[in-house]
Image 1: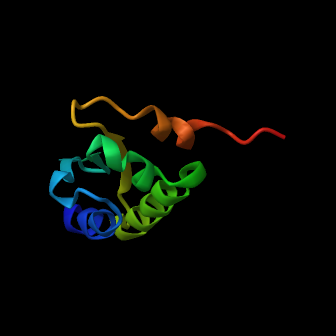
Image 2: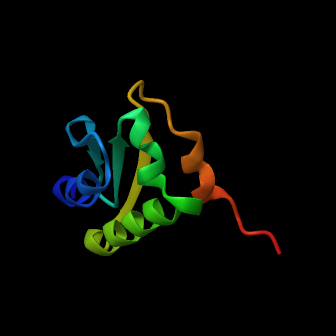
Length: 92
């Protein structure tokens, strides 16, 4: 899973050497924490969260029966505020 995330993220960022993935693997779920350079957060999140949503969809398909979650963190380890877009529900 780590290799897949790196394969998808490194080509779209300006600082590929700063991309890191930490994995917590459980029986039924896999939690991945993606750390990127602060300058690259917009490229990873994408417009309206489309890029990160696509990466998460690919990751979910690759995880099979396990539930895979991906959080984007800044270099200090704080979750990026723009990443919260996945938790917003569209308003009617």
